[in-house]
Length: 142
Image (cartoon, rainbow, N blue to C red; front, side):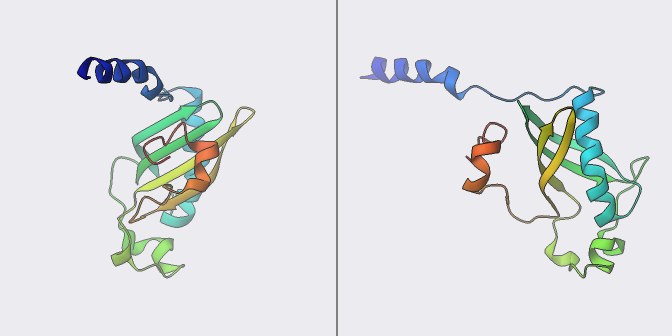
């Protein structure tokens, strides 16, 4: 019984292996993904921004990013002074800081943000409708 279970697990391991890659620092994909997210971050948080990458995944033409926007040089962004709060009326108490996640699609050589959130307090991308296109980069929720 134990041998059968161990064999089944070993056979399944390749299927459970990571199906995505992380674009290397300085790579064209990494730059293009950050460039695709920057206008959204600057519209909501004010310009200029740079990103600290927490998680960046690519599988084929699907991409996922989880980043912490900050000001150039590493200054933290005060969420209460951002357009997201001042222009759009978001209550900073309901935001999880400035964390940003995005689901991206590569069209030719261009990365495009299709869905994104800033300050989400839940795992908004854990939705079955995203799995057909982005399941390879968010397997933990698909």
